[in-house]
Image (tube, rainbow, N blue to C red; front, side):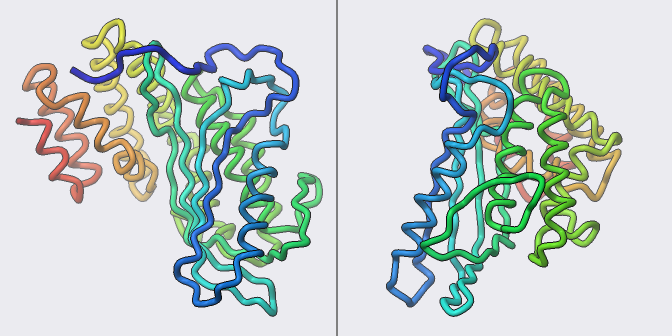
Length: 301
């Protein structure tokens, strides 16, 4: 049986008034193992200031209780550091999770690896955000991911509920292209910041956004009370995943979804439901991401 039993620890199904409670509970990790330079002050400052920037800024007009904050992780792996230019080239892995209703279980909602996380930074820098004047690549990237996380979270609780926040992220993409850093350019890489967001907001990919809602709200959130009904909704959500893949064959979003949901999907369908249901799910997932067939095969056993 899919393990979604227990007591929920937080559930932003209703947003209520609560002073000084921002939207994110972000944890920032800076990994410098690849550097030969042993100086750590600049990276300690980066971790501290990025954490404060993400957690203390008010990103929306909504009010969250402290227990309703969105859990997210920003893992920065530093690849090189030019101390003269204060230029840090790194890779970012950003993930966020969402609680499942009536359960202590949390599911990965969004996960992406950004290989072009490059920016200038020194210990004396103050990270401030002015959406009307974007002149700092680090703050632009952090703000972009903050709005992506909030947008995905809102989409998972109501159909297309994150649109306004995703459009704000889109504005950041458009304005940041003048900064001269990689990752923002339009139509050059379908996995960069522009490419993934452009796909997500494209009208032909509305099935994908509806997948985010149906999979989480109608699927996982129902499993504690009705495991069979919740699993059926997940199966129907995967049909939307397939439709979105067919609608935009070059999009990386369906593939990324299977990558961070693979273990969860195996848990949901392995030895659960009918053989016909498992076979249909297998066919969808194999068609989207054949590289994970060792996982999909587990569902058929």
